[in-house]
Amino acid sequence: MEQEAEKLRKKTEWKNETVTARVTSEEKEKIRKQAEKEKKSASQYMVDAALAGMERRSSKDKKRVWILINNQNILNDIFTILRDETVSEELYGKITELAEEENKLWQCL
Image 1: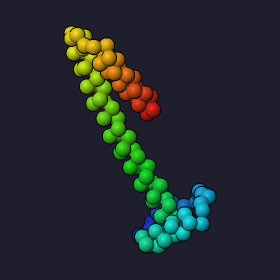
Image 2: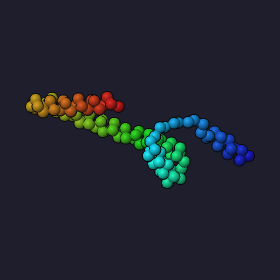
Image 3: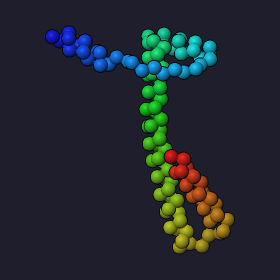
Image 4: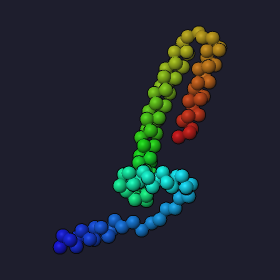
């Protein structure tokens, strides 16, 4: 009975979709060698690499957002201080320029 459950479980895990990628001969050889090194099929190596890349990207995006939030808070503090201080137009212009560039980064997300 356990063997039947194991067979059914494996059946539901069957891979029945295909993804095609065009690569150069050199890229294909690199993939083959790396897959062989990791004792995987080229297909499994590419799937694992793609999924790992997506996870890293997501983690990096979270770090980038955290940095943007911190930078925005610093800029907000600077503008609060500047309201009460007399500063040169040049300094105020550069800080405003920095704030505009920070906003562009937010728009990239």
